[in-house]
Image 1 (tube, rainbow, N blue to C red):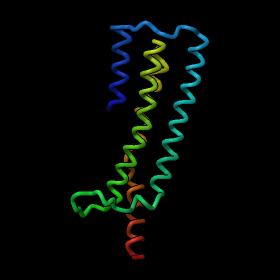
Image 2 (spheres, one colour):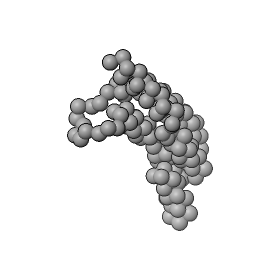
Image 3 (spheres, one colour):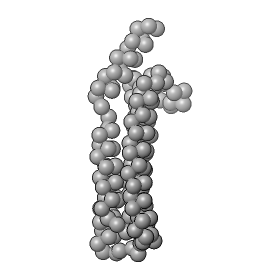
Image 4 (tube, one colour):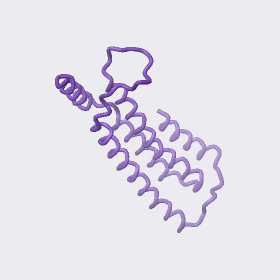
Length: 146
Protein backbone atom coordinates (compact mmCIF):
# COMPACT_ATOMS: atom_id res chain seq x y z
CA UNK A 1 0.00 0.00 0.00
CA UNK A 2 2.81 2.40 0.84
CA UNK A 3 4.39 1.79 -2.55
CA UNK A 4 1.18 2.75 -4.35
CA UNK A 5 1.05 5.95 -2.31
CA UNK A 6 4.54 6.81 -3.60
CA UNK A 7 3.24 6.58 -7.17
CA UNK A 8 0.22 8.77 -6.45
CA UNK A 9 2.43 11.28 -4.65
CA UNK A 10 4.85 11.48 -7.58
CA UNK A 11 2.06 12.04 -10.11
CA UNK A 12 0.55 14.75 -7.87
CA UNK A 13 3.91 16.49 -7.37
CA UNK A 14 4.70 16.26 -11.09
CA UNK A 15 1.34 17.71 -12.12
CA UNK A 16 0.74 20.40 -9.51
CA UNK A 17 4.08 21.33 -7.99
CA UNK A 18 6.94 20.53 -10.35
CA UNK A 19 10.34 20.42 -8.72
CA UNK A 20 13.26 21.84 -10.69
CA UNK A 21 15.51 18.91 -11.58
CA UNK A 22 18.97 18.81 -10.05
CA UNK A 23 20.31 16.62 -12.88
CA UNK A 24 19.73 17.99 -16.37
CA UNK A 25 22.57 16.46 -18.36
CA UNK A 26 21.11 13.94 -20.85
CA UNK A 27 24.12 11.62 -20.70
CA UNK A 28 23.96 11.47 -16.90
CA UNK A 29 20.21 10.84 -17.00
CA UNK A 30 20.69 7.96 -19.45
CA UNK A 31 23.38 6.47 -17.21
CA UNK A 32 21.06 6.78 -14.22
CA UNK A 33 18.24 5.06 -16.13
CA UNK A 34 20.50 2.12 -17.03
CA UNK A 35 21.75 1.98 -13.45
CA UNK A 36 18.16 1.89 -12.20
CA UNK A 37 17.49 -1.19 -14.31
CA UNK A 38 20.47 -2.89 -12.65
CA UNK A 39 19.27 -1.58 -9.26
CA UNK A 40 15.77 -3.04 -9.72
CA UNK A 41 16.98 -6.37 -11.07
CA UNK A 42 19.59 -6.59 -8.31
CA UNK A 43 17.03 -6.10 -5.55
CA UNK A 44 14.67 -8.59 -7.21
CA UNK A 45 17.40 -11.24 -7.32
CA UNK A 46 18.50 -10.50 -3.74
CA UNK A 47 14.89 -10.73 -2.49
CA UNK A 48 14.33 -14.08 -4.23
CA UNK A 49 17.61 -15.57 -3.00
CA UNK A 50 17.04 -14.37 0.56
CA UNK A 51 13.50 -15.74 0.61
CA UNK A 52 14.66 -19.17 -0.53
CA UNK A 53 17.58 -19.24 1.91
CA UNK A 54 15.58 -18.02 4.88
CA UNK A 55 12.72 -20.43 4.29
CA UNK A 56 15.08 -23.36 3.69
CA UNK A 57 16.87 -22.74 6.98
CA UNK A 58 16.09 -25.06 9.89
CA UNK A 59 16.08 -22.12 12.29
CA UNK A 60 12.67 -21.07 10.95
CA UNK A 61 11.19 -24.03 12.84
CA UNK A 62 12.57 -23.06 16.24
CA UNK A 63 10.81 -20.81 18.69
CA UNK A 64 12.69 -17.77 19.88
CA UNK A 65 13.38 -17.56 23.62
CA UNK A 66 12.25 -13.94 23.73
CA UNK A 67 8.59 -14.72 23.01
CA UNK A 68 6.45 -13.53 25.87
CA UNK A 69 3.18 -15.42 25.69
CA UNK A 70 2.60 -19.09 25.06
CA UNK A 71 0.61 -19.88 21.98
CA UNK A 72 -0.63 -23.00 20.25
CA UNK A 73 0.54 -21.48 16.97
CA UNK A 74 3.48 -23.30 15.41
CA UNK A 75 6.74 -21.35 15.81
CA UNK A 76 7.38 -21.20 12.08
CA UNK A 77 4.40 -18.86 11.54
CA UNK A 78 6.02 -15.95 13.38
CA UNK A 79 9.38 -16.66 11.75
CA UNK A 80 7.71 -16.88 8.33
CA UNK A 81 6.09 -13.46 8.83
CA UNK A 82 9.41 -12.01 9.95
CA UNK A 83 10.99 -13.36 6.77
CA UNK A 84 8.25 -11.75 4.69
CA UNK A 85 8.76 -8.37 6.40
CA UNK A 86 12.48 -8.51 5.64
CA UNK A 87 11.79 -9.31 1.97
CA UNK A 88 9.15 -6.57 1.76
CA UNK A 89 11.63 -4.05 3.16
CA UNK A 90 14.08 -4.99 0.40
CA UNK A 91 11.36 -4.61 -2.21
CA UNK A 92 10.40 -1.24 -0.73
CA UNK A 93 13.90 -0.08 -1.64
CA UNK A 94 12.90 -0.46 -5.31
CA UNK A 95 9.97 1.92 -4.97
CA UNK A 96 11.94 4.32 -2.80
CA UNK A 97 14.64 4.35 -5.49
CA UNK A 98 11.95 5.44 -7.95
CA UNK A 99 10.99 8.34 -5.70
CA UNK A 100 14.61 9.45 -5.34
CA UNK A 101 15.11 9.18 -9.10
CA UNK A 102 12.07 11.36 -9.71
CA UNK A 103 13.18 13.98 -7.21
CA UNK A 104 16.63 14.25 -8.79
CA UNK A 105 15.71 14.09 -12.46
CA UNK A 106 12.04 15.23 -12.65
CA UNK A 107 11.40 12.57 -15.29
CA UNK A 108 8.18 10.71 -14.65
CA UNK A 109 8.19 7.50 -16.69
CA UNK A 110 11.14 5.54 -15.24
CA UNK A 111 10.24 6.27 -11.58
CA UNK A 112 6.63 5.22 -12.17
CA UNK A 113 7.82 2.00 -13.82
CA UNK A 114 10.10 1.35 -10.84
CA UNK A 115 7.24 1.96 -8.41
CA UNK A 116 4.92 -0.29 -10.42
CA UNK A 117 7.53 -3.05 -10.44
CA UNK A 118 7.96 -2.62 -6.68
CA UNK A 119 4.20 -2.85 -6.04
CA UNK A 120 3.74 -5.89 -8.28
CA UNK A 121 6.82 -7.62 -6.89
CA UNK A 122 5.60 -7.02 -3.34
CA UNK A 123 2.22 -8.53 -4.23
CA UNK A 124 3.97 -11.51 -5.84
CA UNK A 125 6.04 -12.03 -2.68
CA UNK A 126 3.13 -12.30 -0.29
CA UNK A 127 2.37 -15.30 1.88
CA UNK A 128 2.11 -18.51 -0.11
CA UNK A 129 0.04 -21.49 0.95
CA UNK A 130 2.54 -23.93 -0.59
CA UNK A 131 5.36 -22.56 1.55
CA UNK A 132 3.27 -22.77 4.70
CA UNK A 133 2.29 -26.36 3.86
CA UNK A 134 5.94 -27.28 3.29
CA UNK A 135 6.95 -25.69 6.58
CA UNK A 136 4.13 -27.52 8.38
CA UNK A 137 5.26 -30.83 6.87
CA UNK A 138 8.85 -30.07 7.84
CA UNK A 139 7.72 -29.21 11.39
CA UNK A 140 5.76 -32.48 11.63
CA UNK A 141 8.75 -34.47 10.39
CA UNK A 142 10.99 -32.86 13.01
CA UNK A 143 8.38 -33.52 15.73
CA UNK A 144 8.11 -37.19 14.72
CA UNK A 145 11.89 -37.63 14.83
CA UNK A 146 11.79 -36.24 18.32
